[in-house]
Length: 333
Image (tube, rainbow, N blue to C red; front, side):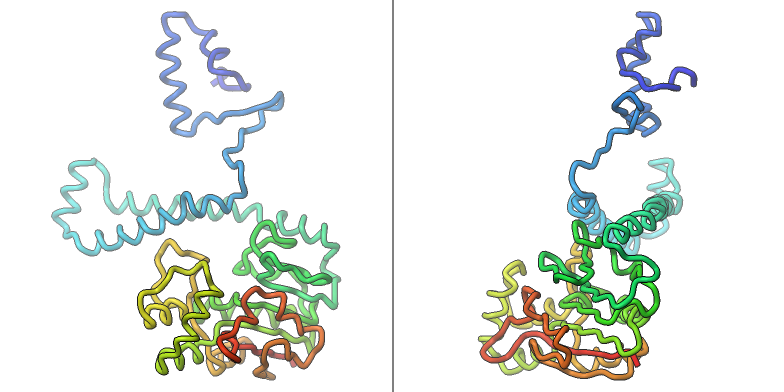
């Protein structure tokens, strides 16, 4: 292994061997690189060459979406084939089907665990830049800021947000550190009830006594009424607002997709996972520990500081005189 103790180019490495052996040595090098046993390096310090030229989020489209679709198809295949086919596969390939599947699970879990080891320092660095620590108080937190950050608020979203994180990690603030939390069109992208409940519990934890959260989500009750009443204005105007959605063929198709029914496996974080009316959102807020829950309307918060709905690209979208969104506030008692 002394041959591999310091960085070297392929030519530098093969020059150490007899000319008659260099071709074979080159083949071995290629095999080792393909296996991942040898890594490309650069610079005098032998730093590994990164394969990431863009933000790692780009790998969602190139790797995770195809993988999600493949796993979905694979689940159908495994459900459909019998033991005889599985045995034929094992005889033909020399691989145990169970071991093959378990290796997929192990590989994904290993990658998740290894990346997770960098999360704490990643968040700490961002908080330090923002001047936030365990003693910070009176914070105003904007979850799902996207391209519309609020001045004077801690703006959270995926990279390259001011504070880039995955909300399923939890909120990196001390108990009672915030007076206000605002989130628009975020909750419907989390699975119900587990994902939504976990985030709302975190929101309540970081709020100070008397702290207030303002939540905006698609109003599925309005969508349901529009479907039953065949409200053409509702569906036509919605497509003009949410221009990135696929054009539906029928009203039911539009309603169900909007409400979170049947997203493709590859849609991952982008798709709606659930739809809310006031009763259901009130219920999950109660489950999270909130006691004072109120229905509101666009830009009509009881607290002037939370009259920030206009920062959202879609919160103010209307059909006629009605907004598409449901506006709810809850107070930590």
